[in-house]
Length: 195
Image (tube, rainbow, N blue to C red; front, side, top):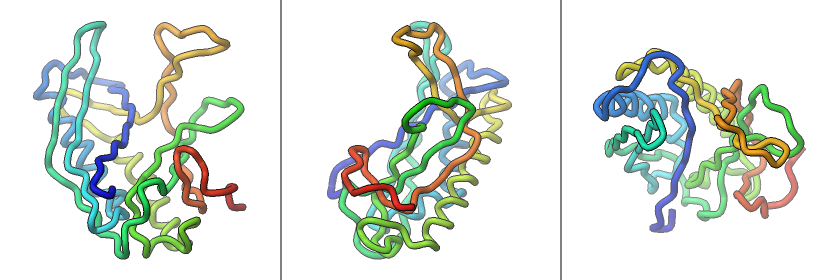
């Protein structure tokens, strides 16, 4: 992104099975990387943008964690100039949790300009493709069975309720994904949401 790195951070829960070594987590991470690659989600990145590293940390107990790194790159294939670093496709993840305000979101930067109608919105065809790819990614991650793990859920942790820290935090699995017409940024300075 303009010569600068970016990070996409996801939370996953190993629902069944266990990771008992760094090698187990490495096998799981390879399956996660493959899910992201085969879903086509990263193909929307400009052909000048690559994801060069995947990292996973699995905390199994306080002070005990396994770690893995996969450096098999995934290259974008999107055409056109790379949109500015502050512009991203917005993926809103659905869950059973309800509260006022936004849901967990992923901001996917590095989009090729050919996928955008303007610097403000996606082409309908791009939105439909990214929607299908994000749903395929969710399905693929939820189907990971590798490295001692027999079931995985993509989701998020809820750390606090009514100004009280939860111990342990509550887990909410993602139930689906929605792609917004409007391109966004984490600061949401690209205008109002489109109808």
